[in-house]
Length: 582
Image 1 (cartoon, rainbow, N blue to C red):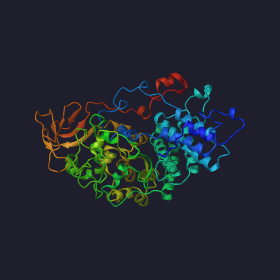
Image 2: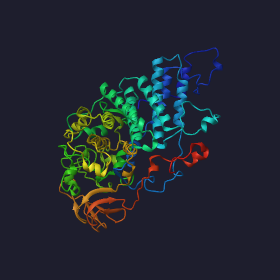
Image 3: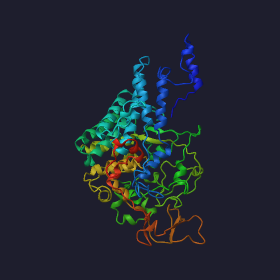
Image 4: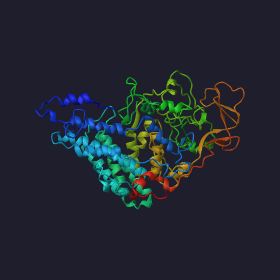
C-alpha cells in the first residue's frame, strides 16, 4: 500500500517554513489541529491514508471469511451456525472508523486547495463510508445513518434509533455515485489505491447484493425496487468493461494462469483491481500458507465434495452426468476437469518448490480436498509468517460475473453477454465455453431448486468456482437467501474400503488409509485417518464418503440472515431495538 508516513518532527519542520510575528500564538507544532492541518493537498492525502489502514483487511481475514461458506470444512463450525449463539455472544458495534471519515468530510473543503483535489479525496472518503455502511447493513439490516461527526453532548444523535435499510442504502448509493464521479480515473498499477475504477467495482458489487437481497428476501417488502439496484449493478459493470482498463489475465497457459493471480508478489494489474499488497524485500509478510498447511496453527480448511462436483470437465460436459460420478476415486475424479480445480486444491502431480510430490495431506484436510489457492509452494512457509504473495480484494473477473448475474436476473442475458462474461472466463480457464443446452439438474437438486433459468444457474456455478476463497461466498448465500445450505453435511472423497491404502496423486505410492485405530507399525509416507464413528464417519459404514463433523447439529434459521444487536448496545440505547427472532 502506498501509504505516506509522517512524524511530529516532520510536521514541525513544515510549519517552520513560513515565519510569523505571532509565532508564540501558534498552535503547538506537535498537535494536529484544524488550524494547522487540511491546508494543502498533501494534508488531504495524509489524512485519507488512515482510511486504508483502518479498512483494508489482512490477507488471512480476506481468505478466512470463506470459512463461513457452505463449501468449506474445518475443525468445527462457527458457534453462529452450530451452537447456542445469542445477543450476549455478539460483539458490540464500533463507529470509530465512521467518525474518522465524517470528521474529514467536515474539514476537507478548504478553498485554498484545488477543487479537483478536494473532490478526489472527498470521493475517497465517501467510498470508504459506503464500505462501512455496506458492511453494517449486511450485518444488522437497519442501522443509524450518520452523515457528520457527532459532538459528545449530542444526545439526540448519539441515542437515536435505527434508520430503515432503504434510507441507509440510498445514502450508500449516493456516496458511491459521488466517488465514481470525482475520484481520479488514472489506473493504479500497484493495485493498492482507490481509483474511479475501483469505486465502479464496489458499486457493481454493492448494487448486485442489494438488488438480489431485495428480490429474494420478500419479507422486507422491497421487491419492487430490486430491479433498480440490479440495473445499477449492470450499468456500473458495463461502464467498467467498456473502459477497457482491465482484462482477464491470460498467457495461453490455462494450467497455471488462474493460480498466478493468487501467488504473485506483485498484483497482476491487468486483472487485479485492488489488493492487499505484500512484499518480501520489505518483510511485509502474512501467514496464509502456514494456515493452509499446518494441522495445529490453521483451522484445517478444505472444500466439500458437493462443491467440487460443480466443476465441469474440460470439454464443458458436466462431471455429475457421468454414470457413478459420486463413487469415482479421487485419482480419477481429478482427471480432465476444469483446470481451475487443480489450481484451487492439490490435484494430480502437484509438487512443492523442491520438487517433492505433495498430494492432499490428510494430516491437514478432513475431506481430501486440500486448499491450494493463495498457498505458496515453499515448504519453509508452512511453519512461519513469511508468505509474500499479494491477496486480491477485487478482480475484473468479479465484474464480469456481476454483469452476467445482473443481466440474468433482469432477463437480459443472451449469447452475446455469455461470450463476454461466462464464456470468456471458461475460455481463459481452458474449458469449452459453449452455452449449455439444458439446465443442470445436479445444481438444481443440491443447491438451487428455485432456479429454472439455465443462464442464471451457470452464473451461480461460475461465481462459486472462479471466486472460491476470495471472501465473497457467505454474502452470496445471504443475498440469495440460501442460508439453509450451511446445514449441508461436510462430505469428502469416496473411500472404497476401510484399512485399504489409497494413492491420491497417481504416482503409484500410497498416501492415506482409513482406519478405526492407527496401526502399531505405520508405513512411512501414509497418513492414517481415524474414522471414530463420531466426528468422522463413512457414509456407508465401512465405505463411502467421508462425513466430517457428523456430530455437529448445524442449524440456520431465518433470524440468522442478520446478526443480533449486542446486549451491551441495547443497554446503552434502548431505541435501537432488537432484530427479529433474537
